[in-house]
Image 1: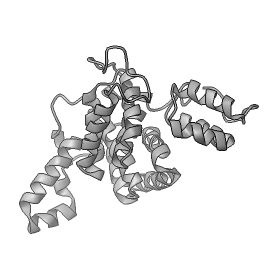
Image 2 (image 1 turned 30 degrees about the vertical axis):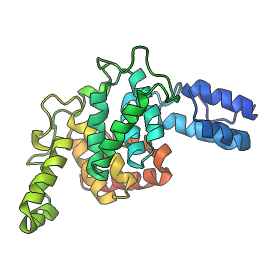
Image 3 (image 1 turned 135 degrees about the horizontal axis):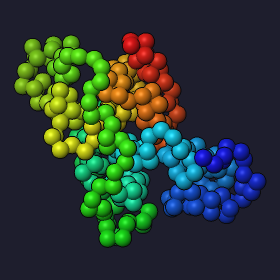
Image 4 (image 1 turned 180 degrees about the vertical axis):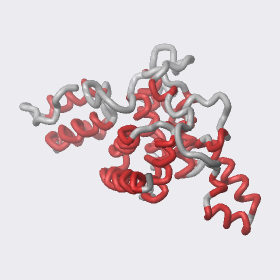
Length: 277
């Protein structure tokens, strides 16, 4: 991993812009304007954001670049910032990640932010496939037809600790809700259980296992400030073999679109989860 934590010797706007494009492969037009005004600020943002998203030379360990992008993309769609999300879709395409995996990630995020996140993800995919969209390169031949393997595809598929049913129906709030309107509960918890593969409720041919889906859900809950719920899902992620480092990386992945407070709350959630161990 390169040491880019030291201030660069030359922070003139043209040089900072060239470094940013070289590191990321492209740049949003608005950032070019920001660089002209505050090159030193952008240099710092580039150093931190590049580490969080695992750009070239950064963050050599932990979650793969593919997984970080699968967490960040629905975060943009939930805001919603579909224009930025489309750029991340193209990056995923260049990594060999197919639409199926992108939508599986969006479904796990949508547990927290709703169906609209999936719809916005679809719009981001449409935008990424539009030749008029100019941010980031579309691979030669278009979106990948075959998925290029990455480590998280084989992670978190088997529960290695804990016991008992995992369905959301077990939560006291949803048991109470059953007394109010049972059909609402059946449909709502069915959606959540499917998206997070509770008790094997997910698609039999799902590409993302339970552990990675929990990482996505944890990041979304931290964005929403739901520390208690995030802690519950962290415990479940650990049950499926995810590590503290995996959880932290998932939270780090959404700092650029959501802010450092997400990490602050995520750290609280990790500490709370580990007190329950």
